[in-house]
Image 1 (cartoon, rainbow, N blue to C red):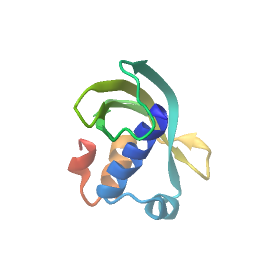
Image 2: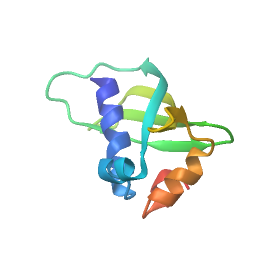
Image 3: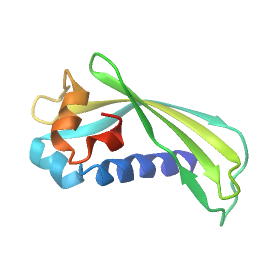
Image 4: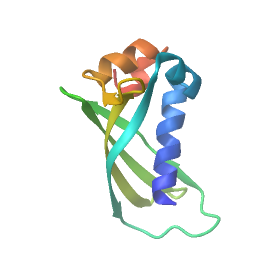
Amino acid sequence: MYVQYADHARWECARAAGVSVEVLQAAGVAPVNLESTLRFHHELRAGDQVEASCTFAWGEGKTFRVTQEVRRADDTLAAEVSSVCGVMDLTERKLVHDPAERWRALASAPELLGL
């Protein structure tokens, strides 16, 4: 569930920035998660309310990082998730060379994505 919370938070962040599934499909691209590392801190139990942060780190090359914290309602850190992601061109089936520029071009609020 920890990873699902993080995945959901990434999608909600993208959607808030104006990058919906429909926008991505129209552009012929899709985000891909290439690697995720999960560090557990505290147990979550059924019914716990959680909040997941989402911080994008853009560099050079075809990949970027997303770091996230999953916290319980009492602000206890339950897990940290670190992901290496990319943007795949769905026609060529290859990662785009500048994912930050692609996200910036698609987003109506790129600042929510750290751009």
